[in-house]
Amino acid sequence: MRKAILSAATAGVVAIGAGITFSVLPAQAALVTYCDGEASSVTVPGDLAVAKGKSCTLSDATVNGNVRIAADANLLLSNSTVNGNTTVASNGYLSADTVTFTGVVSSNSGFGVDSIASDLQGGYRGKVVTGGTEEGYLLASDGTKVKNIVVTTGIVDLSDSTVAGVVSNTGGDLVDVRNSVINGALTVASTANGSVVCDSEVYGAAAYDGNGSAVQLGTGSVSPCTSSNYFDKDVTISNTKGSVEVNDNIIRGNLSGDGNDPAPTGAGNRVRGEVSGQFADLQPAAAKAQARMALPQRAAEAKAGNAKRAASAEKAAVAAGPAFG
Image (cartoon, rainbow, N blue to C red; front, top):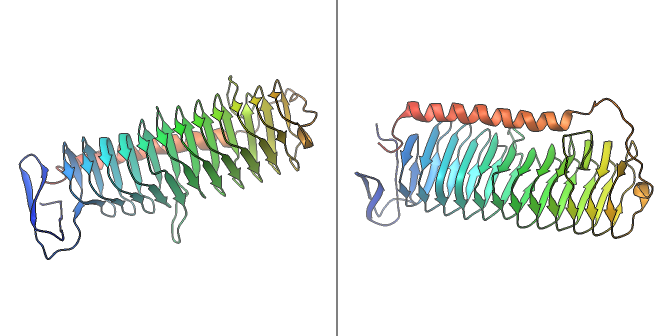
């Protein structure tokens, strides 16, 4: 059964893989290839789509167009290049291992995006859409590079990664940054579970406002961390509805904030600018049982869910057979 549907505005013959070619008719619309199954060493000359509920696994592939992952669909890419934008629809899933995306990667109530050693040159966007059921997540790890990250939903989890510009999560779940570099501003506002930054560098202003659960910069009791951070600009933490712990950081700018309840705690910080507000006389946190586990639990749940979804998607793609056969 043919699993690739192609159309184009110009005549020609399209090579999809070894021994597989498709004629292209001039009367047809823009080229679209539908993928269901597995394929490797392929070049898709136009847009690539994974239909609702289908699963596609591609390795050593080049897509010279946009990628659309429909609702409930899965796309697993490895050692590949996408020369266009990538959109993940409601409950859709994208796994990218050593993939270059020249355009924007967008999640519109998607289940999640897992980026391993990949390059998101156009940045990442995440939002909830009408009728969407998922808040979603971005897991970026193992040397992933991202132009910038702007989301209004879900989880942003950075590990061993670099962001060229800003990271912003407004109204989402949490931001977890570990052993990573953010070259622009870091903004975390009105999230349900706040943020942890550990063993990382932030070169723009870091602003936290109105977050729930906890904010931990450096070591602390909220989430395991044994290393300090470097903040090149101001750090502002205000109106947190939960724990604020700031320990063992180097802050080149100012450290300030008010309206945090309970009051912030911290020690061992080196602040080159002014320290004001609730941070003017920080005291170490009193020894106590670790009760605030919502943030690390949510991050762990996202990673467990990602592993389960990836395994299920791979199994479905294998069962579907050759993607373009």
